[in-house]
Image (cartoon, rainbow, N blue to C red):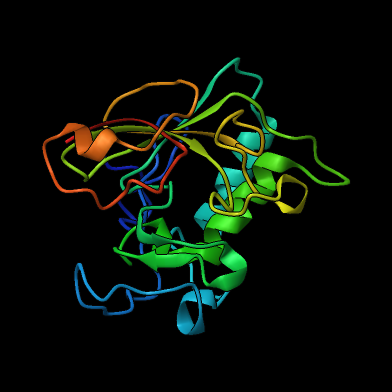
Length: 206
């Protein structure tokens, strides 16, 4: 995502209203890729770790809450939706995740974004948000849900048959919406079947 230089005196700042770029702070936790993967426990559950940095995270919350646009597009570089090899609710570690360099490696930070979207006692929910992702060399579309493999909607879970429990839409490298169907249809027949449990995926073209 090419960006003009925002502030020559502060070259690390790259976020703005038109687009924003992630800045990993602190360094990613090293894990073997793609196996054995990781669960949401230990350092991955540390709320002090942030993908955006504290200043940019606050900026994103402010812009989303203050936007009057019909559709809000968040342009950033890595997959926001969960991608994992083994499914489980977050209460049990969330399953087996693959890539710590995307939002899966920063679950507490991702939870804070969901908190903005859902609203609270002093802030209204933020509707009609599409999160655009990149760096995946494929096209996906997914309903965004904080705990996609938790079937109890009242406890923050998700119903793949109805879409109840979704927060917003993740559209890596393309824009798409749709009711959630069976995940990825074995990557549309082009690859093996690592995501057939991810029922919130509406489209995948690798």
